[in-house]
Amino acid sequence: MRLLHTSDWHLGQTLHTFERSYEHQCFLDWLLDTLVHEQVDALLIAGDIFDNSNPSAASQRQLYRFLQQARVRAPQLDIVVIAGNHDSPGRLEAPGPLLEAHGTVVIGNVARMDDGEIDLDRLLVPLHGSDGTVQAWVLAIPFLRPGDVPRVAQPADGGAPIDPYLHGITQLYRQAHVLAQAQRLPGQAIVAMGHCHMIDGAASLESERRIVIGGTEALPAAMFDDAIAYAALGHLHLAQRVGKQDHLRYSGSPLPLSFAEVGYTHQVVLVDLADGRATAITPVPVPRAVPLLRIPATPAPLKDVLAALVALDLPDLPVHARPFLEVRVLLDAPEPGLRAQVEAALEGKPVRLAKIEPTRKASKQQEADAVLTLDQLAQMQPDDIFRRLYRQKYDEDAPHEQLSAFAELMLASSDGSVTGGAR
Image 1: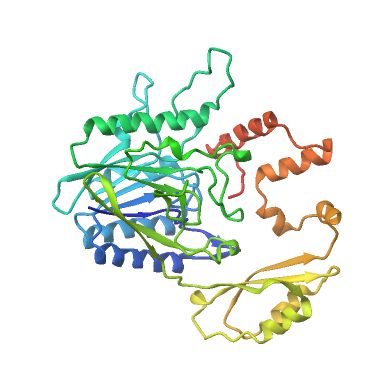
Image 2: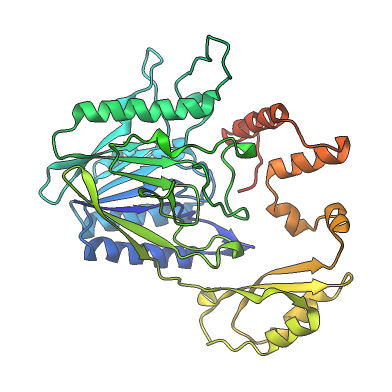
């Protein structure tokens, strides 16, 4: 059978106030064609379907229209969706009964039974081949919060304490895998899905919300049993392998979600399964509907930047298809009329000015003490601000215990009790 792995759609995302529904629709239309052309049997969407936990009606319609059209164009297609850290588990699961009637299974959270034990059966989803028989089982595990994982006892012999959250995640995957092994028949593959941050995963700091503050969320590739045929991961926007293993992968986001991602090759991944293993793993590049331009490639003096903007020659396109532009300027001193000069240089050009990024020439100490611009502050992670304030007050790095306590607070905020957090 053939799977298609994708993630991190972030429907409803805006880029510096510009909405991006046109780009997302171009991707979804392309994905529909790809599912049909490549004769895909199962579509795995590994979280962050929406850009925030309260998506607009328009972005929800965009998702449900896609699922409806996928059912029409590929009637035998299995679709499995898990929630990411940007998604609201309850909102994502709400239409579940209706979607399941049309071949889509949505797993937003980890449910528990009356006795308090995790309902592992709910996380195990069968995948059918073109002949209608079960060819694989997928461990559909959504983004996990501390309360979602099994409790892990600390060593009784006085050994080094273990992180209950990280070890709980590993234990949940292992429990689900044991159940899959018990249910699978010879020749059926076991596939894992997850929305998490793996050790050594390359992150885009401008557009990815850290799952747990301080980097303690990084999980080892060893948490996936050797019998796993493929792991379809979400969260990191750069398509990449995990632990240099071909069968453990982030598909990456289908379009650049910040200017830091202009160099990414956005893709989906086709996975062919046979005899319980992956026989072929093939990345498929996603066409970029709207370019993101950085002019110049590295910050340059204002005079040079303005000359480059005046010389900019672009084809005339409808407004919704025009490139987004980040202008990067190197300044010796404050330039109050910067935006007006940039806009004058761009007068009449078919481009959307999304961002002006000024960089000051300064010594390292001046850079460390510089007052942040509003744009720079908006891009900072909550723990970056916490670390910065702690160092300013105590002239030393924040201890691990303080970072862990702050991490718990931010995780509580993602559950809705507190509002906040950068992507």
